Image (cartoon, rainbow, N blue to C red; front, side, top):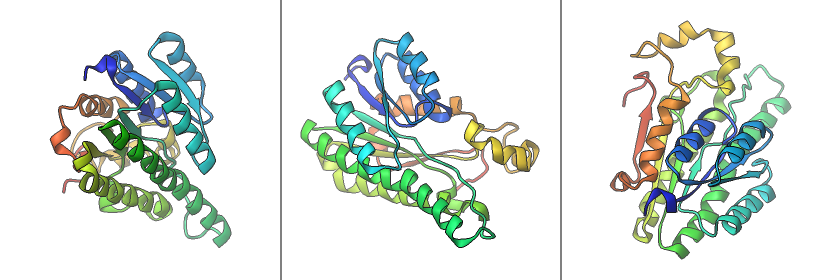
Length: 249
């Protein structure tokens, strides 16, 4: 299948890693459904510049929004060939927080980072089985393997669940010509990470890396493009680390 025939949904496409992925795919003439929640400016700019994309708003914390998002994308694009599950939050909730506040952030993180992904995966699998093929690309994290700092327990837990889900999809649905991949970035220089950088300093983060600079969204996007092309299909079930050598396993 040529890129011009490929139809891809990217969640969280309005900023950071998702925006870089969307731009990379559009440069290669893939047809791209751009999901966003609140940040619509960049998405609107992309839809004004490219005929082969459309935007879809959804709050992934709300299951009804997730279902509507999938239904709308499938209705508008007629089919989806690949879904890039990128949207997520990185919210601190140190254990010094009152239990109610701590749990509300835990629940919000799990709802957005894992529960919505489980629901999208369920709907996608039914769609892919009907169409005879499909790919799921999960944007995970090194936190699933090395753990995270004490203020981000929910984030690490959500990415661990995502990784296990992706591997289970690869094992269970490969015979339906469905492939599943995890891309596990380390700390990536995005707006979502700004608070952490401002608190801890970029120099402290660089000490963890084997390289001399932080990973950027543009370091991740070409790998997504390669997976979408089908050239890595026999790596289904694989986790691909992009962390500047900060965690090697």
